[in-house]
Image (cartoon, rainbow, N blue to C red; front, side):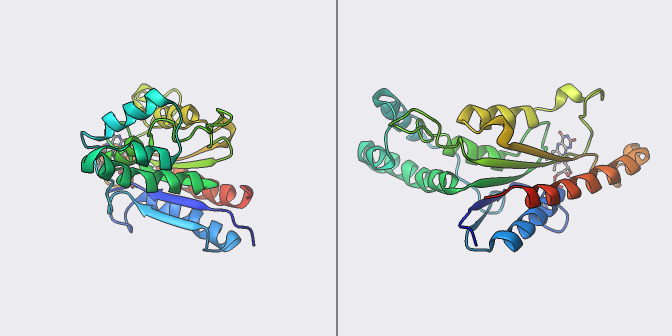
Length: 231
Ligand SMILES: Cc1cc2nc3c(=O)[nH]c(=O)nc-3n(C[C@H](O)[C@H](O)[C@H](O)COP(=O)(O)O)c2cc1C
């Protein structure tokens, strides 16, 4: 048994039995645990257990750190001034450590108003602390060996050539975010389930076959990814 670690984050505000992204990430996680065991599996429900929005002491601490360069977590702790900055760092550092410890990060991401849910954005803002993913000795990204699997679900369709292609601020944003942190583009995997509302919205009823095909392809893609990603 390997000691590989999977960090599984869901961000749908919908019920577990209804959410398409939760269903798909659960399938990936189930297959991953069957292969690697449960000891390296970490789960965080960002909708049910929300990461607090940044408080006014977060940015001053970040600026103080940036002026000094890349610091270790212990050095950041030592720089934190007063109870508010210490609280911000106490809320932040465990989430950074959890991300750094993961070999694979699995994200369930519904599209809300053309982009990611606020619950996920709260996590992103908090974990993106200055210098947290840079090796102080080499300058290289500490996430250059991390794999990220993003499972998106959207009610409409935003594929190439569709009328709303330019409205997708979810996938381009997440690609920019993770590659900017140093995750190689080749280690970033996207699975999309689209037209998830076709069964509910009368105007989309004609697209039900496409929706069913999209869901089937997404289920197959998460199973293939869980089987093919090693380590
Ligand atoms: C608050 C909210 C905003 C939404 N905004 C969009 C949107 O901008 N575009 C879209 O295609 N679908 C939108 N939807 C539909 C969801 O993307 C769709 O229901 C998706 O399946 C949600 O993921 P989930 O099933 O994992 O919860 C929205 C749904 C909610 C609840």
